[in-house]
Image 1: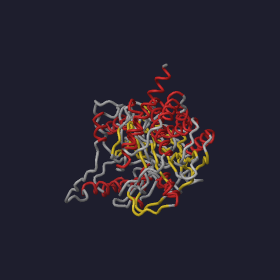
Image 2 (image 1 turned 90 degrees about the vertical axis):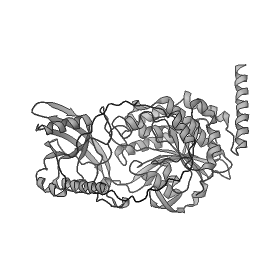
Image 3 (image 1 turned 30 degrees about the vertical axis):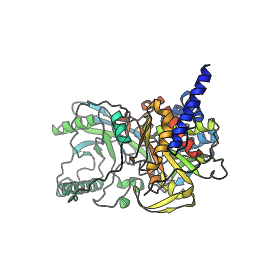
Image 4 (image 1 turned 180 degrees about the vertical axis):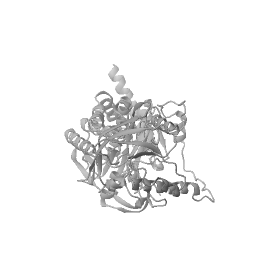
Length: 536
C-alpha cells in the first residue's frame, strides 16, 4: 500500500510539473531519473572518497606541480575505471615552471625568548640549500631617495615593510548559509543601468604608492635579501591567506605585458613569506622596542622545468541520438589549488562533485541523447588558463583580455555546444543558479529545480557571477553557468588559506550538490534543442 501511495504521488507530481513546464514552454522533469539520482547520490556516494584522494593524498595541487600532475592522472584513471569514454589529459600552454615546497620551518630567537613562527612561503619563491639566519629589519621608506640609505646593508636580512594590522574581535559567525533576504534579492535581480561617475580619473595618491612599491621591490631584488615577510592578505586566529610571490611591476603596465613568477628566472624572485598576523605583530612590536629578532629559515623548494605545459582532465559519456549525439553538454570544476593546505573547498570539493556526477550517471546506466563531457581544469588560480585554452582549442577564441572579449572566432563545434555547468564556491550546497543574464532560461531552470524545493534550492537569478571557469565559455557567447552556493566558511576561513583541509568539507551539502548538478546535466542532454543562448 505504501509503495502504491508513493508511486501515485510521483505520478501526480510528474504530471503537475510537466503541466507547469508546458505552460512556460520548458520540458518536464523526469522525476523517475531524479529520484534515482537522489538515491544514488545520498545513499551510495563515493564523493568523500574522491575528495580524500584529491586532498589527503595528492594535495596541494599547484598548477604544473608534481602534485597536480599526480592528481590529474588519478582523476583520469578514476574516469576510466567508471567506464567513461576518451578519458585523457588535454595539453595546454605553455604555462611556465612548476613549483614544489619540499621543506619549510621558521624559528625566531631574541635575547629574551624563542618561538616557532607559523608562516607559509608564497608560491614560486626560491629556497635555500641549507638553513639561513638573519636579523629582521623594518624598512622605513617614504620616497625613492630613502632607499639609498640602505644600499648594501640588507643582503643578510629578513625585511618587513608594513605596520601590523589592527586586531578586532570577530562578532560575525564564521560559517553561514545564504540568507533568505539575499536569495530574494537574487531572485528579484534584473538589468539595471549603473550611472557612470563623472570627472573621476586616476588616484594620484594610489599611483604614487604603486610607484614607490615598485621601486622598493626592485631595490630588494638588487639587494638579494634573505626574504620579504608580510602577514598575508586575510586572516586571524592562525589563518594565513597566501598565493604567489610577486615581481616588480611598473605602474601602468598592461595586464598582458606583466611578468609572471612562473616564467621568471628564480634568481629574479625575492623569496616571500606570509606570517600569521599575530607573529608578524609580535616581531614588529619587539623591533619598535629595539629588541633584536633573529630568524632561522629552512626552506627547500624545487622548480619543475622539464614540462612547461598544463593539463586538463577530460572524459565523457557519448551521446546516443543519431542526430544530436555529437552535441555536447559539459560540466566541470578546477582541480588546481594554492599550496598552504590541501585545497579542499577550493576546489577539490567541486572536482569531487563532478567526478561523483559522472559516477552517478554511469552507475544508473543513462543513455544521454547528447554527449556529456566532464572537465577538471588546470591553471584556474592564475587566470582561468586551462578552461580558456580548452574553449579556444575546441569551440571558439575571442579577442581581448581574459574577462573582456572582442570578436569571436568560432570552431565547427561551436554550434554543437549546449551548456557548461561549474562548481567552485566551496563546500556549500547549491541553492540555485545564475542565469548570466540569459532570461530565456529562467522557466527551464526553475522547472529543473522544482524537485529540490525541500532542500531550499530554488533560486534562479538573472544576475551573473564571475571569476571562475564558466567565464571561459560565457565570454565567447556559449551558455556557461555557476551555481549559487551556501558560503559556509569559504571567504571567512578556507579560501586560499592554510585552513583549507578535508575536515572543512560538509558531506551532506556536497552530496546534494552532486544530485542537483547531475539533474541539470542529464536534462540538458535530453532536450530536443540546445539551450538558448543569451541575446546580446
